[in-house]
Structures are given as structure tokens and as C-alpha cells.
Length: 319
Image (cartoon, rainbow, N blue to C red; front, side):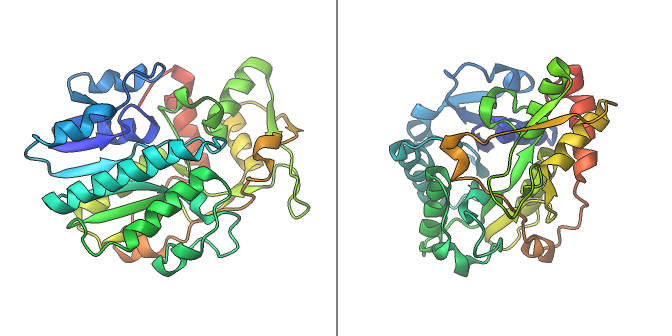
């Protein structure tokens, strides 16, 4: 029996569907009272669902748990209420870690590339760097605080992996609103207006639209997660990107090309509330994962965007 937290969300629902297809019995955990995620659960309708608020009470009598994939989190990078992150990203995660440790259950949890801040220390998943990282917002701080706490624990689950997700895009993110990927927003803007508005650069080192991010397709994320557990990789924190930074213009252009349209891009000011918390460059160092034997090619940006646009967004289809 496998537990997935955040199972109604973007990455969690994609992972849950892949696990179900591989024959696993699933327990889905989320706040199912939140409207807007119901489409992500259509393919998972026969799975047992446990409300997040009742999860630890349910765990007290649960038996036969093989692994917990703790993907659920508050991920809004513009949220400034630290108490929300303390409750959902720290305290909740610590309780899951302690349970997995006590019951000897493997654990995968979601960290984030937001922990790297402006990247002054680079983008290596070396454990020695974690305590020195300086995230730019409370979300990134909460993820890094949990990573730091984990690395101080002498009692650990038999297998554990913290995954620093970079800029993940793909199906099942429709409910994320402002926090959905630029691919999602470009598709819908092009469909309605024929053009795309990207954030202007407010950093003299980068021209408009040439801010660089490591964009990773959600299907690759799901593949790596399953690899780590099934191959009993070395415990630790791992980057999960492609290792290749690309510009936002590249990303938007890939969407236009997938729609067989000529690129038409304008630039607008980055909103004030996130302007000073904005990462201008991210690129995952993927050497640790590759050293564990993961050699499956990642989707290129163009391949991932084309699959997402033509097989999901363009036909109104979930993963």
C-alpha cells in the first residue's frame, strides 16, 4: 500500500496515476474540500481518500504501508504568512518523517529549487551547502528549513529522498492559477489574444525574456521519483531538473511552435510583490542523480512543451 500526499495537486496527481498504472494500491491524502482540483482525481476515483486533517489519526491504525510519497505542500511563492508554511511545510512534514522512521517506511518528500535563492552558492545538491543557502521568500525558507532539520536527524527512514523540484510544468496544473507554469499561461493567452506577455527583466545582467530557468517536464519528475525507490538509491537530497537552463522566450516560442503560430511576445513589468524575490537563473547540477545510475534521457524543452500542448492543453485532457 502506497500513500501519496498532495494527491489532488499537480505533481501528486501525476505521480498517483503512474503508481496506479503500475499496480500499486493507493491511499490519497489532501485537503479534498478545496474546489478546483476535481479533474485531477477523475482517474483516481476508486482509490481510498483521507482528508489531510485526519491523516495522522488514520495512520494510528493503518497497516501494510510500503512507502509514503509526501508531495503535498503550500507552494505559493507570493504568500508572506510564515505560520502557514510552518504548519504545512514544516510541522506536517516532520510528523511524517518521524512516523516513517518509527515504522521503518521509505519516504520521498518534496523540497524545491526555491531553496537556492539567487544562486550565489550555485545549484549543487551537496548536503554541506544546505545550511548556508539563502532562499528569497517564506516558501523557499520553509523548504530549506525542513531540509536542514532532516540532515540533523540521526534516526531516519530506511530509504529517504528529498527532491528539489526545479521549474516543473505539465498536465494537471490547471488549478494553480497565478502559480501555474509559463507554458500553461502562454497557451491560454495565445488562444485568447494571439500573443504572450512575459515579465520584463529588472536586472541589468539579463535582457527582457532572457531570464533563465531549468524547466523540467512532470513526466520526468514522476520517472525519477519511481527510480529512486525501486532502485534503492543512496539516501539524500537530490536536484530534480534537467541540468539545462533555458530562457522564458525559448519556452514561449516552443508553445507558439507547438500551436503552429508565429511568436508574438510583449513584455510587462514584474509585479512588485515578487520582483525582489525573483530568480533570474536556475540550473540543476544533476551529477548526484546520474551517479546513482539514472540514465533515461529527459524531455527537451521543445519535446515536453509539444507533448503538453498537443496531448493535454490542446485537447482539454488531464494526465
